[in-house]
Length: 262
Ligand code: PGA
Image 1 (tube, helix red, strand yellow):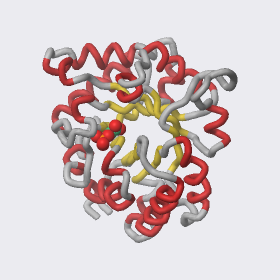
Image 2 (cartoon, helix red, strand yellow):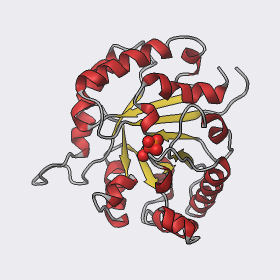
Image 3 (cartoon, helix red, strand yellow):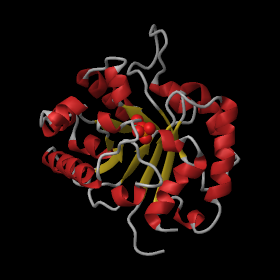
Image 4 (cartoon, helix red, strand yellow):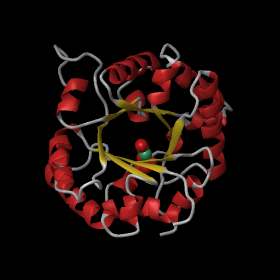
């Protein structure tokens, strides 16, 4: 394979996939992942992760044990509460997610911010708790259509990233950042590669000012096998956080294949 950068391919399954469907996903994923040249890329130039809903995490963990050694995707959750346990009806803690086999956790997804009214402050608290519990937080941020049209994109990115400024540089370095413009999520209308590049490059500069030497920044919002190559070839974009196109192992992995030309 030609000289290509490492791609982070993260699948946010959202509120989809029963336990049985999750098992089916893993079977298909393994069948595809063990075929060369994908098998050679797995864990090297491709870091794949899946984020199933809470009820399917244990099924995902069991299914990953049946995958070809070294080829199972990383397992993560889509959200968590910051307290370790107690009277928080309806929520799930980080130690519970660790017990279910997760190493990563998505925090601050725009659907949590807009539908569940999570604030910058709450999300920062969750990110700190996730880091303290040894997780890799996948921190999502991005502007609404109205904010973009009002030329507020960079102000919003700046506000959302600076909400993490109480963290040390070493902590900020451990986070995976996912720039997801809200108008591009689930709409089929991805940002152009230039728009995504501009926002991710801006984020990296800002994170550098906050002391992060080499931030990993993913783009998310209607990424699919058709637009993957263009988006992932941009130098400020380290990978993709994928919703809709991650629901089938085939289209999910096609995103990497499209980029790598395999
Ligand atoms: P989408 O979702 O790929 O379906 O637009 C991305 C996300 O919300 O992470």
